[in-house]
Figure 1 (cartoon, one colour):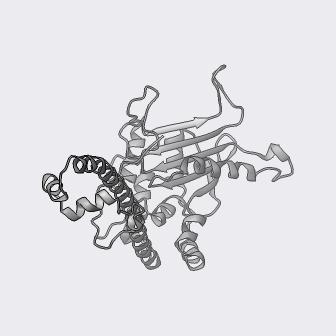
Figure 2 (cartoon, rainbow, N blue to C red; figure 1 turned 180 degrees about the horizontal axis):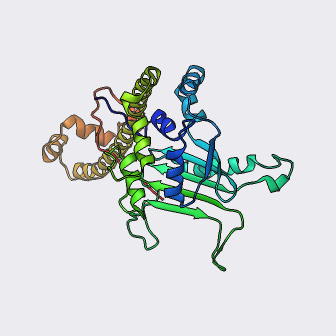
Figure 3 (cartoon, helix red, strand yellow; figure 1 turned 45 degrees about the horizontal axis):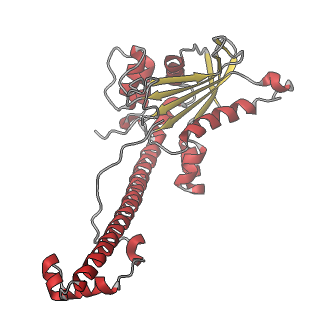
Length: 325
């Protein structure tokens, strides 16, 4: 049976923002943020037509820019807002972006009911990360904690800000979590089988995105997204390898130039001592023509092909480790 990744854009949106199925997102927020949500309304519910319209209008970029995050109004002890985003791969600006969506959402409520700042509501954000954003703990050791939570906090008086503004980061590739439910969510995002004893809302989130439970249009869209993602990864991988190859060529060019400059001095000394070009060539296992080139310094050090990659060049397949904060 065909399977899909639960971190696929379509699967994520379907599992956590389908109208009438609020339990998965409420459960996720409760388990990650340790808050009790009694009511939740999606601001932009999942719709397969949204995916199709975005792609028809703007291509794949339109999809990732317009329907990437999940936003909802919630009720805990009071009215509040919740933003939830999935980021599978590391990007250079994600730390800033993870604050942008919550702050914009927070500001949107200003004067909404005519009360100016009184209309601003508590803000909660959840970032589900498929990469290690925080690599070191406060002691400089490898950080295995999969949960980070930030809020306005007065360190001197050890008290929180009167209005809650909390942003959480759930790194599901790490190994250490605070509760059993957080470990179940790790199984979920790692595409592992969900244990029978896991909460019903986690099992429900997994069930609704099983391939057999998708509509025909969703399956077609999923196939498109998978092809587009594979193409994007291939392009990014090629660009990375080309950049590495350029660096390697430049290092080689500089090393060869340094060797020639060193040999020029040595060869000039040997010529002054009476050695012929042929004798020098035999001593250094190079041709007499090569000796002549070095002595006459006829090499062009502005090599034009440093920024070119030949189709026959071998490209290293080794991956680089992600850097974290």
